[in-house]
Length: 416
Image (cartoon, rainbow, N blue to C red; front, side, top):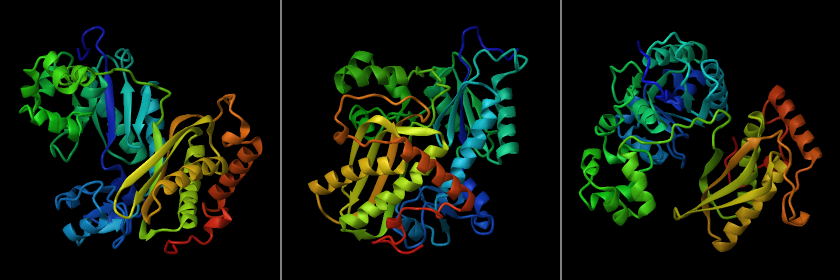
């Protein structure tokens, strides 16, 4: 009865509602848990940015990416807390474990988003409507992981993602948290959106479309594909033509994990010293490397980000001949990129960051390379054994039990 037409895909996007806020409240019930106006991302007086804010705080104009200083001015009564990164990683794994019981095709899109493919599970769930299955799945995650999901569904990832946005409490307080777009209704569903709401239609593309008077999807639906190609180029024009009609990928990669991991730090005071910046980079690599190994992953590409005192942001990425997982090897690669960035422009910096991408399972076989050994960071079995031993000790006795000597005193930063 609730069964879709034969061959129709059944794709869900499960999106955690305000994950950083919810996890901060669970991790610190006495402070964050009691704060109605809660901002996650930094401490008062700091120079960080807002990671997330409670719905009540957002009513004051707060949004992700906003400087903490501005958030304080807009909402002076808010409670500000750091991002609970470790606790978020734990909750991510808890949610993933629950979702894996509902379908083997689960792909994490980020720490708080998961795509699921339930195609072919109709008989398993007694031919109930997809909305009913999604509702039961949502209740299961809430009961076992303590977090609330908004779930969108449809015949492809694009429709599922947009439906999940419409299912969120901030967009519809009366919504049950689940919105499924029936097969054949994709175009009508998309027609109720602004172009800016469609993933991939960023500020530059929005500005280009505004020049032709295009703000909402119905206006763009009247435009021929050829016109889009002339205005935007063949590739972007064809992509947009399909996108506004609800046409997108329906592939869910069950082995896919989060596509990248990143960590960055905004300093209390600008840092001009190369040694101090390298120490900050080492601290970030040490923390992120621990998370990388906890997920059983290795990084095939490393990126270093630097934001100068004048807000000029620069970054450098390098693919590694072999995926790396140990702090020594990763820091060696990251340090060279930081030095290259500093050599191009040696001014005081307000932020440094590092990210890992091209993530692979760490137990994979090493890739052999013809590059001379001195042109790449070699990661030895001894490095891996040492990293594993340190992780085990820190997990048992506290994450600061064993750390690089260089981080015992961190130049340029306030003591914790």
